[in-house]
Image (cartoon, rainbow, N blue to C red; front, side, top):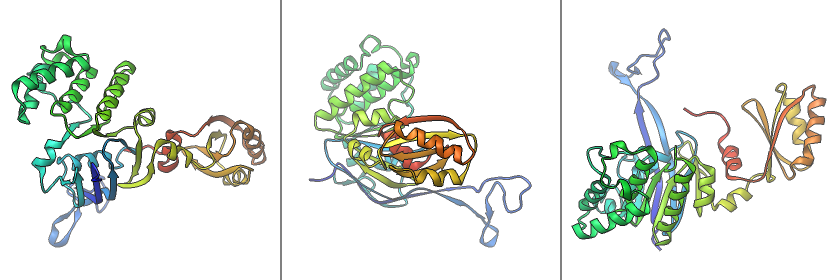
Length: 339
């Protein structure tokens, strides 16, 4: 069976000027000096050998912190970003060697709506279908069906400049579905949406997938990934660091339970004591607190307090959580903020 989406050793390197730091030797707005006085640009590695196989008819989630390479991956697969090296295919078609064929098979919803404000919702859907050679009667019928399904019928003939953010996002997804693509790319589709709109979108995405279509979505919403996706990849620094079903990934969390504790001070002695507690499989100090992965939750708190007291520290706050995608995500990517 041909994978709906396949990447092999995908690499993307962006050139950007070196950071400007006034008064610091060796830095300038144009970069550092290169051969023969030419400015040498720094490199930003967005993807570093990313390989994925996504089977037909699945909802696949691509998770990762800001700057991990998610949007770059989607950009390459949808012909908007040219890779530095490696292969990218959709339904067996090399997306950069056969761009026109690939575009007929995909629908794309970007992070921010890019609708034409001079058109009505119905016109936007109809014009999009016309680009793909769909006849006027068929596109009118399909547009009406999608407007009804996305609860936009009452505003169908109004200019979209007056739409709310949620309405624009619904229309963007409807537009991507107008030519019935085999693979639908959704780049953070529910960002900024209210709970009612988010649940409606989830329902529509599931329906589209049940018709045999493949959906790839990027998201920071762990609940969304758990609810929708049958397969998930966590990427960071341009590489895949975890891959599997939501259940498999949650079961891979060391020990199962996560105890997030904050103390009155930092101490490597305390971390060492915590690692020796029965049932503790891993201890990570990060962001002013300590993450304890263990086979038990509440019953371990007393031992944590005792260990802290022995190190001359007080336990200020503690939070216990069962296995979740959020725990797995933080375990692999850390808690430090990304730019």
